[in-house]
Image (tube, rainbow, N blue to C red; front, side, top):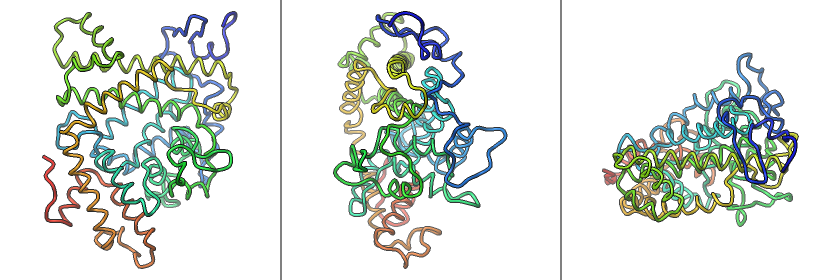
Length: 427
């Protein structure tokens, strides 16, 4: 690419040349105005329930604030990421993970001239539907809900912000902007094809109830890709996951620093750190490795995003949706490297016996809670146990699912203790 700078290069301050992509020194600092392809809060498609606009905040800033002040957001503090709550105060929780994702999403949005507030908002909301006890809790909940349409944490996040948060006088949910709901429900890509047939992991089944139920009220364009802000939040989630699971796994002693030499991407970072800081103490060495992995991944996404946007030359946020592919993600080289990192984490962390032994115990907690409350739903506290006589088995299952999915790790253990005499000791 030669000659005068393109509009994308002028707006982002990043140069795409025949020799690669070069970032100017002000990336992450001076980029503040939105590009034409960013979501513009002034042009929002609005809310399901019309409200007067705030005189001091954009619609996306208002959405962000509603999410932060929600009960579901506060509960993330006591929800597991990988290590359950008793294992130490320095390991990540859903809340600290969410904050890290938000920081990375804002950095990506700033560099790519997207709307930072919307990217932050989507990052803050992306895990609101997670069950207690991390992915083990989600897997068990999906197993329990299989006869009733299954469980998906992304769909549950939509259910939280459109129904389960009941704080406002005039509506259920948080009544978030269309752009926030759209980005939340399909930040990983389109959910249906042009004929409405489910895609991806839903291809051989159907869309989760929460998504089908809300789609009947408001069209979220489930057949298109989301806007750039949602794409930035989605890849920020991957970056944060990889980095903090390396960090937590090392600090938990599940593997040694030297084991990372198995992964070329990590081996190069380790060699760089050890060459520059020979004899560095362990805790600082770990931090240097983790922060460099984040930096490399973030810069790769920025370079790839700029190149993809320059090739498309979008004139609106809708052009990003209609591109037919993800524009903001890893390069081919980084995609391969990141898969190796995930493979390493799977074998060294997620499948480590110390982690698996606890996962088996918490799986039992969630499964037994669901089975007991399905057979005796009146055991749920008020207001969950109201009007049960008028509900079908499927409706009761969804109610029990909503109740358990909203629990923190600690509350799930307390509820199990209330209902059973043999609650497992996770310590």
